Image (cartoon, rainbow, N blue to C red; front, top):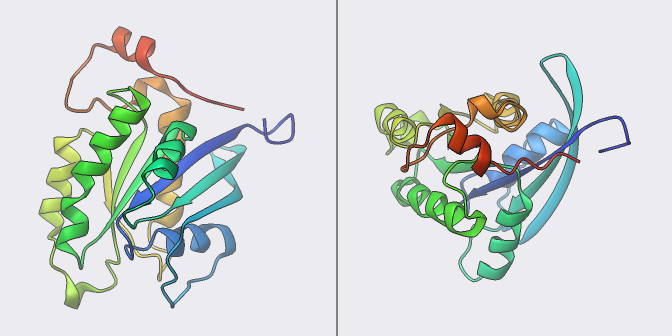
Length: 196
């Protein structure tokens, strides 16, 4: 529990470098946009959120997007109850890497289902777009999970992505089924929901 009364949920934000993971997290927690890209190794934030009229506490792990942090990365994945995977609509490479992140979460957590939202960030940069809306939507369909576009700069869908992943953690029936579909009974047995 956060304060013995407020439930605490652990959310891990992953994605390639420079896709806006820190900017999104700071926009949620501090209501401001950071203009300058400063590579993150590891930052943890706490933020109170209202979900379905319930006050709860988020503990958010903002992760490194660079290679070379595999041991830390695997530790973050084991720590989390839900995951946000960000790509930039201005970077084809970051979009293509979403598959790798999903497979890594499945491997490290030893789960085929887990709370997940895929986010196409930086949709305020429409003039620089290289990843189409239809491509992002198709990725969400492929993994049977929530997908949305967002802008950390404009605070567009920032709260919504965190609310969605928390709703998935809170309600096992909303859990997504990844590439190995399972029955609801199997999902309930496989799901490891960590609520403190």
